[in-house]
Image (cartoon, rainbow, N blue to C red; front, side, top):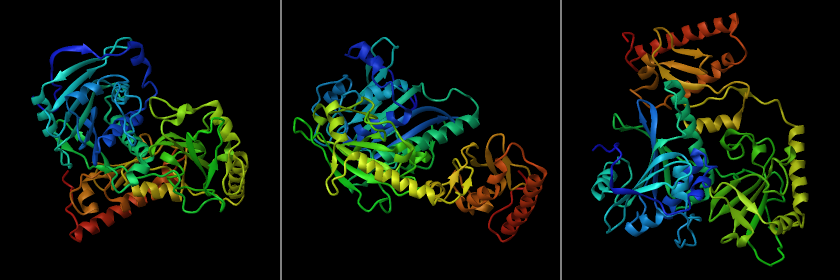
Length: 515
């Protein structure tokens, strides 16, 4: 049996013990990124120091997803408890788990088949296979042979030291693209990996910033070739990491008084500086106005990214207002987390208490604070200069460069993002502007000369790619490419072709004119 084959269960598959109606409801609101985050919660609770998220590919088509960690693993009792919905497990004071449904709900919200393989110190390796059996039936669970589990764990080629730990694998993933178009598959893969990395970087930013925090990486793995892509580390994106506050009186802690005298939450109000292009403000590249409001944390894990939790509707003038709200303990019934850990419901008493809460330093209430934030935004807008706008690059560049774009320029939202990639082109063409596919293509026959070595890194040559993107992004705008634009492109081609051959003549790479 190869490591990619789904192992058979030992004995008959049995129904997971649960109310079938419950399985149909939980996890419905998961996205691919939030479902992966739920599995990362389990890895962090298992005290993992390294977590690898791997998208499995076969001929460039996504066929599965793995979350691999080097945590303490599970023994027989632990894996049986993990198969129960809303089991009676006792969570520790720092555990991110809450409902007892995360592994199952997150996985089955995306995939029809789930493999769980785990090895704990001093215990026999254990494995389970979960199968989603339909919309109205309980999932089925079966036991995997310990020898198959051991082989599968040992067959996972990662940079981590995998003495103990857990492998979760999704197969038959319903949310993967069904298209066979390789270009569409690549676009989906780039978008999915970017969304997962962005989401994890935000929701776990406090935990990743700790000296003892885990290292999370994302990569691809070709199951046919048995080779992986370059691992990409999840970078911290702190939604409160502004260089200077938008108002010198902030941040401030809120004084919140509830009728029962409890303290279910602690809150600090912040004002971002106006006109920020920082990725910490424009989360995932989206306008900052989408992320005004409450950022709710439980045990330093972000559960809600903006929004007003029923207090008010979003308003354009409040885009600089962000409130860091930490749930104390279980929230005392005043703050309820949804099963996907991506939203928060506040009790009526807590909403009223927040409406009348005051800043501990200045004594301003919450509406006064929002007026301050609106004033900062208005003054910033009044002195705002005409922004520099370019077509957004989409893949082919390191994250640090993409972040630089986000800080320095604005993106033309009326034009699809440009994918930057290498491909074989005809001789004498250094690059190609493909408006129909929204691609800036570099000629692979000159790759070694331009990079300096034989590279397979999709994000290589960042200086060259950035300069070419800035030189050509104007040609992706507008409804058609006119004679002037075509003449400019021809001129740039000829000049760059001469420059490439000057570089080859200098001994910096062999020509590929025979390909």
